[in-house]
Image (cartoon, rainbow, N blue to C red):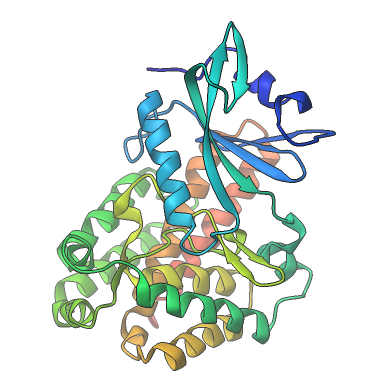
Length: 336
């Protein structure tokens, strides 16, 4: 493993490290990244981790995926994703964008107003029809111009998508009897397998219609800013399998997220505007299938998060969310 160099976090936490005036730095982190908020700019470095579905364990890999993140996110936010800079070692001192030996790389972004995140505005009751319509208006031309064909189209085939669903069921069997009931697990698995087995014609039609695209991969309210315009950011860059697919897989994530927060009417409006602008009426035949998939994945992630949570109250909150997501996934399988 090629670890982040010693002193890196301290360097990025120092206001004097940056080229622009900074009074304070706020450090955030996820399981794969460190993010430093400086007021004007945000800087992201990747952790040297390998989770199987992503591998950032060498400096070359981290540089590659930061460049991918820059290129792919510029499709929707060209003015937000600015550049990738080396972190250099100059006589034992780390410098941002210096001339010495590169020891790390950082993605530089315009820092956006977190108060304008769609999920926060939603919780404040400030998201309605006009806001979801604006999101749909952004996504339609994005999908129309996104890459398709060739190796991307194969991700629309049922036997290829089954890799994702089989992985989900294998990874969640240990939660049966806990946040996931046996009946819910069996119902969702049977529905999923039946849909994949019996709707080959539908999947083929989606491919022939050009609906398999290099999409976003992580389209939920927490990755959307509703400001002077709509900014959709933080797409999946580390694994093509999570980004290539039917446009319905992307839109189903956001529609499911809105359903989960109690406004299925707004989810319907999102899809309605998309259909009006794109002419993709076939999406209605696959939407619940992909919503079920997306809700199940969110339930799985909350289970994983609960496993690693030391605080009992936070652990129970994640388990409660997992139960709600699994129940929502089951609701998409139909009556009964």
